[in-house]
Amino acid sequence: MSAPGRNSQDRILLDPTAETHPAARARVPRLESLSGKTVGLLDISKPRGDLFLDRIEAGLNAQGATVRRYQKPTFTKPAPADLRAEIANQCDAVIEALAD
Amino acid sequence: MSNAPPVAGSVGATPEATPETERPALPDGVVAFVKRDCPTCVTLLPALAQLRAAGVALTIYTQDDPVFPEGLDPTDDTSLRRSWHYDIEAVPTLLRVEKGSEVERAVGWQRGEWEALSGVTDLGLDLPEWRPGCGSLSVDPDREAELAARFGGSVLRARRVELGAAEDPFEAMWNRGWSDGLPLVPPTAERVMQMLGGTTRKPDEVVAVVPPNLAPCSVEKIAINAVMAGCRPEYLPVVIAAVEAACTDAFNMHGLLATTMGAGPVLVVNGPIRRVIGMNAGINALGQGNRANLTIGRALQLVVRNVGGGLPGEVDRATFGNPGKLSFCFAEDEEDSPWTPLSTDLGFDAGIDTVTLFPGEGPRNVVDQISRTPESLARSLAVNLRTVQHPKMAMAFDCMLVIGPEHARVFHQAGWDKAKLLEALHANLMLPGRELIRGADGIEEGLPEALRDATIPKFRPGGILIVHAGGRAGLFSAIIGGWVNGDKGSQPVIQEIHA
Figure: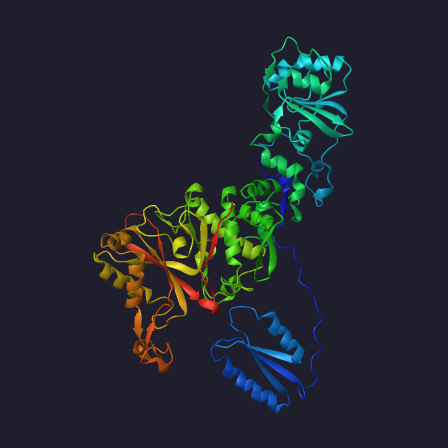
C-alpha cells in the first residue's frame, strides 16, 4: 500500500453514508382555533400514556375540539404507515404522547 | 506497492467517464503482450522479429520495461491498462485483432498456434516446440486490488470524496462525522475493491434497509464501512449477514438504537467460519485483542451510523450506552463445548455458518468457585440472572448466559445437557409475586399489586440463550442482559452467513 498522499488515489475516499438528503416540506398552516377541529391523540403505548392523554382530551374538549384516539402497537417501532395515513386523513392536528 | 506511476484523476468525481476504466481499443493485426522478466518472452524474440520481418502488422505491449524488446519498437503498457482490460493472464500472449476486436488468442509459446494465428510459417525453428508463459503482471496478487480499483472503478457507485491537499485523511474522516470516536481506515477505492473480493455478492446488490433513516444499503456501502472498521475481506460475509439480521423487523434495530436503555447488538458467530477467519472464543473472548471479533461488530455499528444515520444524541437516546456499542462480537467455543451450539438451538444444522444478534448490554461476571454439583451451580447462576435490569422485574427482558468452560464442566460431569440446565434455571426463577410487587422490600419499583399472589417467571420461555465461551481457567460465567423483548421490542435473530 502506498503511503497516504503519495498516490493521488489515496486522497479520494468513498462516501460511507447513504448519500440521501432530507426532503424539505412546508408545514401545514397553524390552526387559528381548535373549535370545530378534529385533534388526534396518539398513544405510543408507554405505560400510563393513557392517563396523560385522558387529561389532554378533557382540555381539548373544553376548547370545542373533537378528539380521536390512536395507539401505536409498540413504542419501540415507528408508527405503521397505515396508522399515519389514517391520522392524516381524519385529523386537523395530532398530539403524540410520550409518557412513563 | 504501487509501481505504476500515479495518474491524476483516474478515480474522479465521475469515474465512469474517465478513460482508464474503459477498455482501450487494440490495433488490428497481431498483438503481443510480453515482459522482460519472463525467460520465455526473451527466448521468443527471434519469432517476434520474424513476424515483423514478414510484414505482419505487429504491436508489442511490454509490461515491465518500456524499451523491451529492443529493436522491435515496443509499446509501453507498464500501467498495465491494456493487459488488465484484455484479461491477460500470462506472457507471452498473442492476440489476433480484427476491427478492434480480439478474434483469436494464443497463450505461451506453441509453434503451431503462433503460425496459425499469424499466418506466418516456419516460425522460430531454432526454438523449442513449446514453452509455457510466465504470469502476467496484471494478475499479480500484490497488484490485483489496485488495478481493479483503477481500471474497474466503474463498478463502485459511491460518491467520491476528494480530500484537499493539506487535509489529513484521518482528521477529514472525523470531521465528516463518519467515526464512532476511534480512528478509521481510509476507504480508498483500492481497499474497497479488495474488501469486495471477500464476497461473491454484487457490489450494487441491496441487502438491507437500515434504520433509523430506512436507507437502502448495498454490498458496496457495507464494504466501505467494513474497510473503515478495519475488517479483512474474509470477514465481509459475516458483516453482511449481521447487517441483514439487524435490519429485520424482528430484531428492531430502530427501537434498540432509539431506546434510553443501554443495550446494543451483540453478535455470536457459529460454524467453521469462526476458525477460518481466526475469531476468538477462548481467553478474553468478550474482550479486546482479536481483529475479527472487534472489527466485525464495529463494522455493523458503522453501517447503522453512516448508512442508517443512527447517531448518539440524535435517534440514539441511550442514557448511558455501553462500551459494547463500539463493537460486541465473539465466537462460540464449539470444539470444547459439552453441548450443542447456539446456532442449533435456534434451528440451524451444526456446521452451518451463522451469526446470531442478541440485543444486549455489557457482560457481567458471575463468580462461583465453590459449587461442584449442578443443582448448586444452577441456583447460583439463577440468583444472579434474577438481577437482570432489576430483581423485581420479570418477563420483559431476555438474557444471554455465557457459560465458561469450568462451569460447563460441572454440568457436563453430572450428565446435564443444555436442556436440563435451562429447565433448572427457569425452575429456580419462578418468583413469588409478593417479592416483586411495588413496595416489596421497601422498594417502590416493581410489578402491580394485583400480582401479589401470582408466581411469575423471571424470563419468558426461550428467554435464556446459552453460549459456551471463555478461557479454560476461572469458575465463572457471564450474563448479558437484554432489553425489551418479543414483539414489543427485539427478538434475537439468527442469520446464515453466505460467501
